[in-house]
Length: 162
Image 1: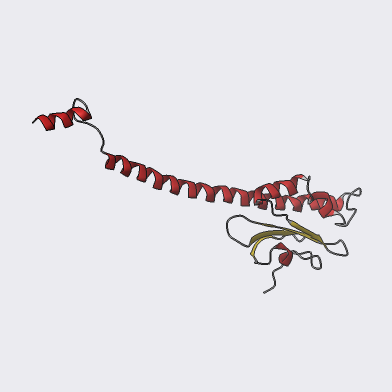
Image 2 (image 1 turned 90 degrees about the horizontal axis):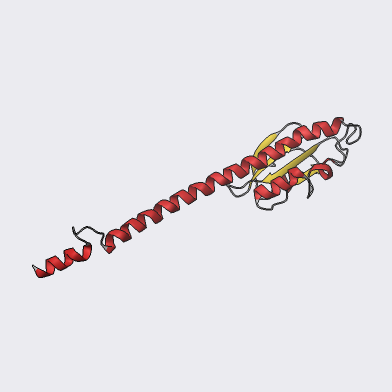
């Protein structure tokens, strides 16, 4: 009886408390749940980054139309469009770089300055790219060669070779 009373008194007046096994089980459950939550958060953050990349590239469609019509800028051509919007220090370019982890987007204008395309890597799936062009195309591609295969200077359109 003496031993039973000592064990009860070690746990408190009423014998309540947790064993080390119970505490380890709770810690293990919390660890597993934390891992699941963090994996999902990362996925949702990357989806948000993909949306930012797609939105910024899509805004180039509107900007390019204004550029084309402005006598002080394009004056009926897309000459210097990429230098105007898609270089370091420009809001669209910097937002894309920030969202895609530092990968430079590609922007090309054809030799006659009548067409353009812009492309950037996306975040969730390897080799996923998003491309927009002067025809109004907004399309997602998967190409191991990257944007340079999708957005070429000769065509200046979003196009994937088979």
